[in-house]
Image (cartoon, rainbow, N blue to C red; front, side, top):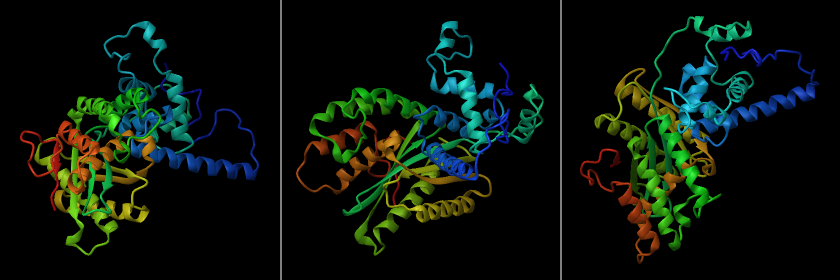
Length: 378
C-alpha cells in the first residue's frame, strides 16, 4: 500500500495525464462549481456534518493535521473513528477487510479535497514528493507540531419573544465525541418518530414521551465527553435590542464556559474552540464575525498569546447537524421551564425529563457533584 498516491492528481491539482482542454466558458463554470463545493465542505466541517464520505474525510484532515501527509495514517484514523466495530489495531479478521471503507476511496476523496478545493493541504515537503512520484513520504523533513485539542460548541437561542432570552449549548470536548454522538443518533433516528425529520422541542407531541426518553438514553451514554451550558437574560432589565442581547449572550457563553472548563480541570491550555449556530438564528455574517473578534480579544487579555484559539463562528443548516438539534431540544426545555406561565402540559413533562436526565443546572451549583453542566450567570 503506497502512501504517495501515484494514481491520483498531484498536490497542485495537475492531473497525471492530459486533461481535456476546456473552453473559457467551461473553465468559468468549473471555477464557480469548485468555489461553491469548497464553501459547502468548509461549512460542513465547521458544523460537524458527517453525513458523507467527503465530509468525514475532510473532518479528519481538519482535526488531525498529521493525516494530511499520509494516506495510510488517514485511512487508519478513518477506520478507527467511523468503523470501530471492525477496526482493531492489534489484529484484524481478514473477512473484515472487505467491509472496511476502501483505501482507494478515501485517498481519492483526500486528493480532491487537497488538490481541487485547496483545503487541509499537506506539508510542502510531502507535496514536493507527491509531485515527483517518490514513494517514501517518511523521508520528508517537516516540523512535528503537536495537535491542539479542540472543543466543539453547538448553540441555539431561545425566548426572543418572551421575558427571558437565552442561549443553550452542547460542548463536545473532542472531535471523536462529535463523531460518536452523531453516529449513535443517526443509527437510532430511522426507527424513531423523527425518521427523516428534525428534532425540535416546539414540535414535540404527547405520544413522543417514550421515544424522547430513548433519545436521551443515547445522549447520556455519550455524556462523558459532553458538557451542557446555558445562559439567560431578563429583557426588561435593558434597553438593548433583543438581537444584540443574543449576540452578547453567545460571547459570554463561550468566554465564561471556557473559564468553567478550565476551573473544573476538564481541559488544559493550549486549547481551541469552535462555535456552530443554527443558520435560522438571528446572527448574520457581521454578527458572527464580531462575536469571533470579541472572543479573541477576551482570550488574549485573559490567557495571553497562543493559549486559546477561536475558530470561525459558523452558521449551518440544522437538518444536517444532529448536535445542533440537541441544542434546540435543550434550549426549548429551558425556555419552557423559565418562561411558561400557563397550565402544565406534556411539554412541561418533556422539559422536566430533559433537564433531569441531562442534569442541566438552572441555578449555579444546583446539581451537587456535577461539573459538566453549568448555568452561566450575568
